[in-house]
Each structure stands twice: as C-alpha cells, then as structure tokens.
Image 1 (cartoon, one colour):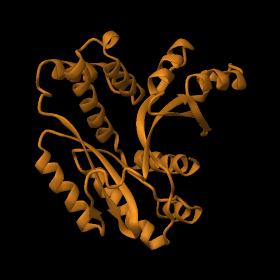
Image 2: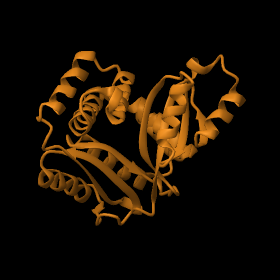
Image 3: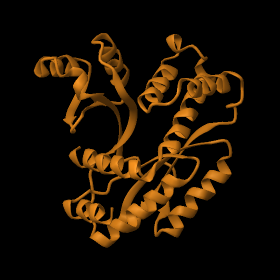
Image 4: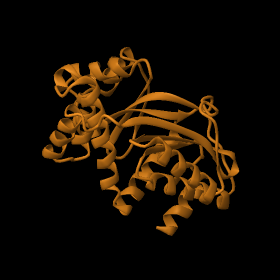
Length: 253
C-alpha cells in the first residue's frame, strides 16, 4: 500500500496549499449530521457519531460547529441527505470510485457524469469497479503520542485486533485493517488509551496502474475537478504515483 500512502502524502500537502479546509469541514459536518439523524445525538450510545466527532476534532473543527451539526441531524434538517457512490474510468483506463452525500441525487448524478465526460473519462454502472477496490479500515495516529511505547509490543497488540499493515510517515502511524475488523481496532485503541487523529473506511486499490506522464496529469485533473464538486466527499483511484509523476507535480507547485 506504499503507493497509497505516497499519494495521500502528496495530496495532503497539495490540499494544504489549496486551502481545502472548508471542503473537509463540509464533509465532516454531513457525516456528523447523518450519524446523529440515524443513531441519535448522544455519542456514548452512537458509535458512528462518536467516530464522526473524533474525526472532526482531528481536523480542528470548532466545538460549536460540531454541536450545530448534531442538532441539525436530531432536529430533522438532515432528513433528505443520503450517501451515494459512483464508479467510472479516467483517461488511460484508471479506475475512479466517487463517494458523495447529497439531498438531490439527480443533481449529483448529473454533476459527476459531467466531470467524467468533460475530462476524458466515462461513468460506469454501479458495481462495475467493485473488483478494483477493497474497503479497509484506516486509522491515523500521531507518532509522538505512542513514542514511549515499545513498538513491537504495540504492534503485537494491534495484530490481535486485526492489524494487517502499519506504515510510518514523518509524523504519523497509519494502521490498516479489514472492513470487518474496523470496530475491533477502534475498541483496542480506546482500551490502550491511544488517541486517533482520523479513522475511516477507505477503498484501497487491489492493484495500481501506471500510465504515461501526460495521461497521468489528465487523470489528476479529472480527480481534482471531481473533488471540487460540492456533493463529493472523496475520490479513490488506482493510479500509481510514480517518482516521475511525483517530481512533475512538485515542480508545478
């Protein structure tokens, strides 16, 4: 999954440069609203809400914003919101999986299809890319928060809770579990008193594909434009971030 992390790191820096914080907040507010709507406004009895609040705090969302989102969910304002997914291909046959939250499915379908068409891709039927991606639990932990723990001992404890892989970035540990072990890992981290910066289910590619540099840039253009759509939460793809592509992106700033 090294390619995934490498891509995530580059995108993280790019997101900071592009000041996409407002977009992140919008997604998190929707997650909190839906969680509160479906399971009630009390985090202690609503695991989905507890997770959404945890992720919001990890993104430094103000407390009053979180509370407003909960009230919106429990007050019925979020009744029309639904989570939807779309699948398709970018230039070069790169698989693209889109997750969105919307109160108007027709509007969102039209917007997503328009991006695929305008930037050289094509929208597929639901389930057409299911073989390309596998849902995994992904937990991000501040490395400094576990620096006093024995690394091997910690890893063994986490393996018991379903850890499949652990990666290190400059300041974080990224833990991967299967979809089924997501809850068990949450529980284990809670038991160990380890604070999680972010925890979510992601769609990890089973295989990555390489394309020439110009095609890769077209793929990234499509993904960037898709991410700019108001209803879109996250876009997954199986483009391999080669050193050549990473270097070209860095040079472009």
